[in-house]
Image (cartoon, rainbow, N blue to C red; front, top):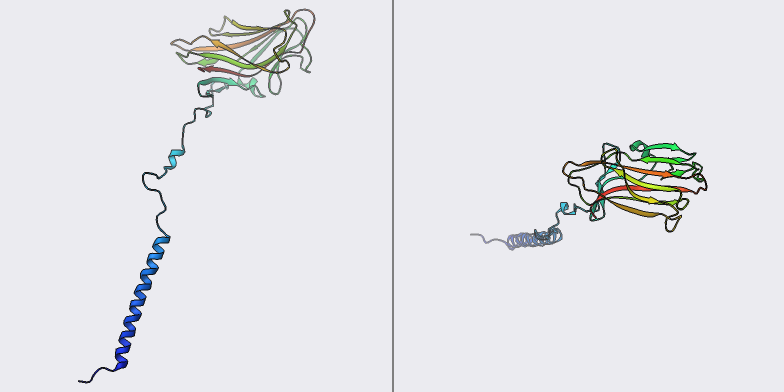
Length: 236
């Protein structure tokens, strides 16, 4: 039997060595790739659900348009809920407001951002005014308690002779007076916020209507009365 040549043995060893080196390199390469592309997601205990960002904020606006066209309801801070509001803007008359000018040269009218009783050129109201501004009907659901009327205002009238009256009705005919203004508000011509309690609605709910009336006597006039940002709220 002829012995194998050294060349043959050396060739077998070389092939085995190459195979071993290739296997080692492949193992190292696989390990390196595996470490670089590991799962970076959090564990089930710490993984963030995208839906967890949907947190209900009590201050989020819930505004919609009601049947009268006025804006209602929305949150007003953490406690009170705005049942109805009118910011007073160029569309307010399209939301159900009504002006009745009974007498006198001036009347209620809509400026770009307020209701104003006075001359349309920005001057004083006239003598013998008897003018009315009516809100749309405002529906308040049954068993509503803690009701408030709120608005911002400023006024300057003849003290003890020319008056602004804030009134409301819940039966469509009898108006109750909430306040009477004359003279000028504190800090005039700055604005103030006024807030008045309204009665609960009872088991059947109620329609409320607001009325702002202005009267003057036969002499001495002033700039008048302006109203803005009118709200009816519950709670707070």
